[in-house]
Amino acid sequence: MKDIITHLDKAFDNRIRLGVMSMLVVNDWVDFTTLRDQLEVSDGNLASHLKALEKEEYIGLRKQFIGRRPNTSYQATELGRKAFSAHLAYLEQLIALQKD
Amino acid sequence: MTKETIPPLEQLRDIRRMMERTSKFIGLSGLSGIGAGVFALVGALFAYLYMAVAGGGSYGDALQYWPAGGHPWGWSPLEFFVLDAVFVLAGALSSGVYFTTRRARRKGQAIWDALTRRLLVNLGIPLAAGGVFCLALYYHGAVGWVAPATLIFYGLALINGSKFTLDEVLYLGIMELVLGLVGMFFIGWGLLLWAIGFGVLHIVYGVVMYLKYEQSV
Image 1 (cartoon, one colour):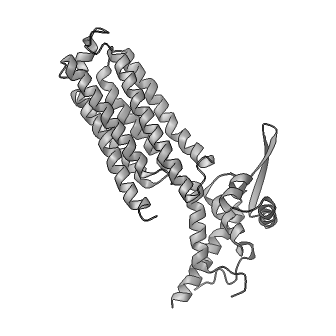
Image 2 (cartoon, chains in turn orange, blue):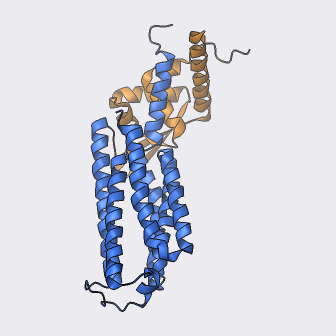
Image 3 (cartoon, each protein chain N blue to C red):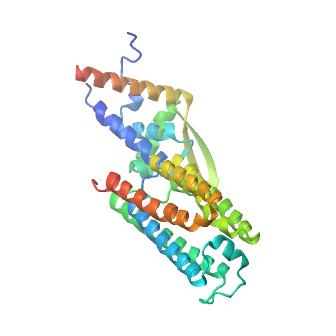
């Protein structure tokens, strides 16, 4: 058997980053406010986690103006999607191991 | 395991919750289905009485030849059916909004977000088209086709919107659509099928959803 993932992806070792990725893989674009409200976190906290995911190039962002208010939306990149499904596979393996 | 790591099962649960929360609108209460069904049945009963009083058996034909204002209740068919439709619509919408906001508040969920908007837009487009279509039917005097046409467009709207909500909505939509299509062939049954589609099916749907998703909560 191939070991696809042998280590934990550090980017997902956090509930907020995991939550962000979960939402982005099933939605096209999600704006900052929606992410914040769904995850029930503060602006600053979310921003720092988004920055981390951005640095990994797992998510992309788009800045727009709605009226005169700036609005930032996020989208999962191809790399992010791959990393996320790899992480899911990793979780599966862990659970399978625990069962044995 | 390292100190920070979240247990895998818990992670999966989190992931699933987040995915569902943002991609599916799950707030619609089953009680609102029951409410809408009851209003539809009352509306259908009014329509039945209206036609019975006028002495029309197969109302599809009868309506076409009715002179406006010749009804004992003093309302022309157009006036009556518009009033009746407004009554049913207002009742169904207010019970839907009431029970859904109540449920969302209890569960601490946001109701008005991008997802709700997307769901409403997807429901609204076929419904608006259906509304105009029915007005055109009425305009051309094909009154008997209005009831099945509302079922068809309503079914299509549900099928379209079901992508953003629970699967049961898809099945409800298919049943409404089939009823409507049957109704197109049997014009005289229009009101009965309409009562089944908007009344009985909504109540059944509401009860099923309530028992399945809400009772345990």
